[in-house]
Length: 163
Image (cartoon, one colour):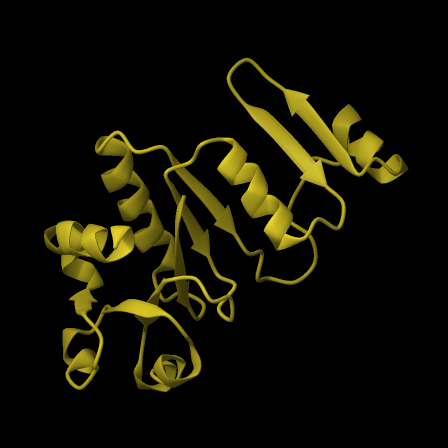
């Protein structure tokens, strides 16, 4: 399973870029998974009135519910490595991770403004850098792409991700 992180500060375009890459690889008949770090503090939103959530709050390590076409699982204190093993067991070809900046997987860094350029010196395993401002990335030593023209860079980004 290939893993690619999409990282950047708030409102840098992480979800936009991730959605484009997911669409691209899904259209290439790749089985794509996604995992997002909830960077807003606290816990992700869950419907707290469901039976599965009541099982979870009663102490279940893992609680799930199966719908007609969707399954939802809730885990208690699961380690990120365990989450990745679950994705591997599902035979995912590519896992896109939004966030977890300090993890050491290949990553695409999104730079919104000059103040975000420090990420390029702080993070490891950078394979590409994107920005909304094409002029911002003139002196960057990594492959770059403008987020506004991402469609024309998808083939190139796919190569970086699959290498």
